[in-house]
Length: 158
Image (cartoon, rainbow, N blue to C red; front, side, top):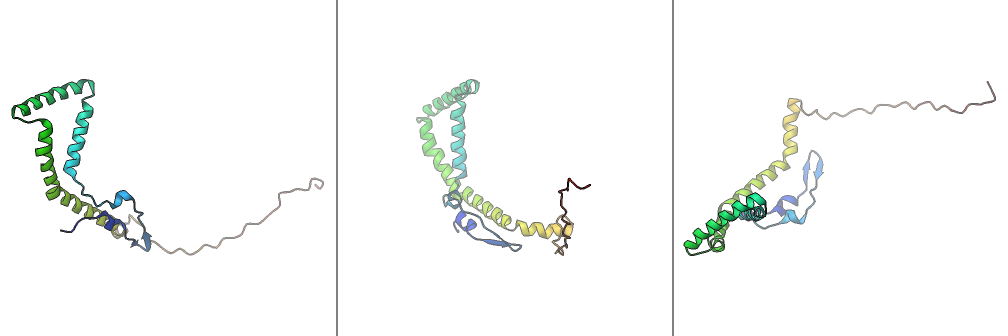
């Protein structure tokens, strides 16, 4: 399977309706790192959980829930951190590499391809429906030069 690259999508100049579209590159646009959606969502969820522990009412319930889960896992002979590192993280990494990353890459490729052709598609659909007016060449209008008059008046002559 071909590896997805943002660099490939953003480096070409495309001509649309006689106009060049130039997309300036940014370092964030040329990342070849995998997206890892499941790991990112899990990490952000843990950050939100930690933030919620500081809230007065919600923090109490989170603390109780975490204590109960910690005791249950302790009875099984491990800790929450061990479960996180040995079970959850490897499963999420496998889910990302085998399933989610390829799907997200294909979706991004399709969206970028659709975005590149959006102007042509809108013009193709819009002109027959009358949404977009056809470009007409207008003849230049001759302008008549205005008459120049003086605003000074001779105060001595009436």
